[in-house]
Image (cartoon, rainbow, N blue to C red):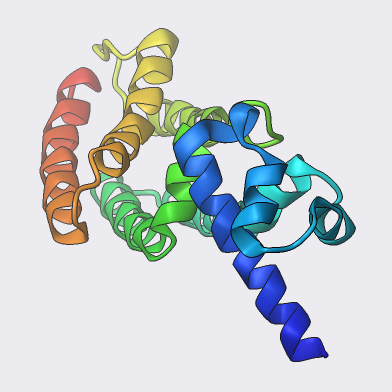
Length: 199
């Protein structure tokens, strides 16, 4: 009996994932999801509560895992007293984050592109806000008196940093291409930060 229940749950999650990809959260239909699995809509409500609970069941593990990994990476880089080493730590963290996102690619495509109306609709904003806090500390640690990077510059830059990830996901780039792209971003950013920090 347990094996059968697990099979139904997995089937529902897969059907829901396809539904959210096709229609987005708002326009996704519980009836279409249940019909695709050959079960009643009541089966969905029993297992997941509602449509929002169904979306959460698909993305929560991946979303929580990334947030934990990202916070650890940020803290490691922030605690480094040397700018070059801090950037190196940050780049390694970016590599780990990208690899993790590609291990859960569909979940993050849902999170970044189809989560409006769910508790995750501000997930991108939360990531960017954490990045902004880190770079504000980074600027105070390393910038000299000739620095041109103000708070607004940091704010926009940090949103752009996550936009890179958004772009490789929405363009459905293979991991190797995404990794090569992000490596160029890292090289570009390293030179740019030294310039705006007046170093």
